[in-house]
Image 1 (tube, rainbow, N blue to C red):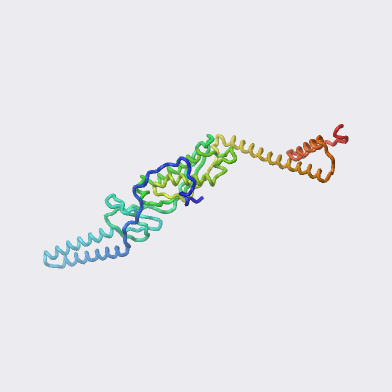
Image 2: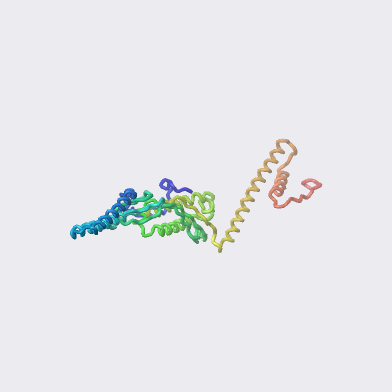
Length: 314
């Protein structure tokens, strides 16, 4: 069940209200790392050449100046090369300068940014999270067991980094909370025909689960791609009793269908006999015929008729 148009889905009652994010993702200022690497290596070579040239100069002042300039050039080149970053596909780098957010690098390959910044790696790949089997009470108070799997990914790296302490733990906790909340709102099996139930309306319930999950994790910059129940059953202590109730309901439904069909067949038989004027039946004979046909059509075993050699009134 895809959860892309979450904003247009029917809202679920009791959705949590998360605070507005204080920071949102924007691209960091970066340049291609190839040119920066080339300039850095060139700076190291120039520094080495200056130091080597300084050792060959006889004048003390010139020798010291060349060595100092060479050392400083080498330090600057190495420091500048510290701004190089390898960004793999499906990854991003959150850039901070002295504690301030300076953007996110999403371009894959070798990139260069200010070497005085810190760069935190964060994965933007699609992930799965499967909850443990949770034991909760449904809307009727019956203990049930259920588990769900959620497919998600980081949409806003700034929110995932700065809005929550640990976005992985946050998604895990909020997923479990959403599954528990959905479970207590709906019964496992609805007694009313038009009521929603966890077992009978899986698509509608999982859509509501996706809407609630989106509302819970949106503050962390997380996008819910899909959510679905992977386990749904009555708790072991009431499973046998509920199975008997389901079997009884199935038997009643089957009997009702058999009776409806038998009534239709009896009506058709009486109408056909009346149309073709096969035999003249009074009300008592019709009642006896209906009774016999209902016994034959609705019985579990083959009927064993009793032959009457006289008349109905003897």
